[in-house]
Length: 93
Image (tube, rainbow, N blue to C red; front, side, top):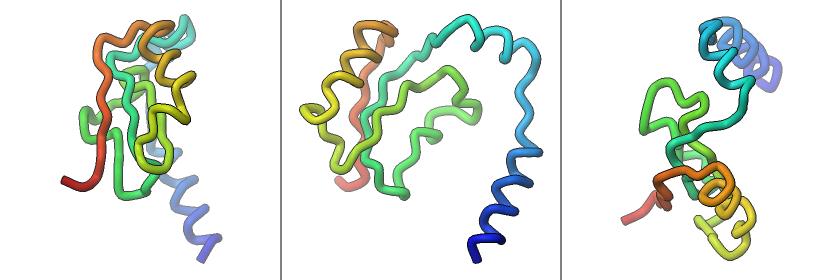
C-alpha cells in the first residue's frame, strides 16, 4: 500500500507543470493574497479557493484552527507578507 501511494505521488508530480513565468515570479519572493488558518484535518483543503494555489495562500495549519498557538505564523502572513485577507477556515458549521 505505501509503495502504491508513493507511486501515485511521483506520477502526479510529473504531471504538475508550472510555467516559466510563474517560476521566475516566485523566485523573487512570496506575495500571497490570503493568510489562511485552517485545521490540519486532512478533509480541509486551502485549495478550494483557486485551482492554482502557488503564491496565492500562506497556509497556517494546526489542530483546531488555533490562533494563539500559531500567532507567529499568522503574524508573519498578515504583517510581514502583508496579505490583505485573513481567513479562518473550519470544517464544521
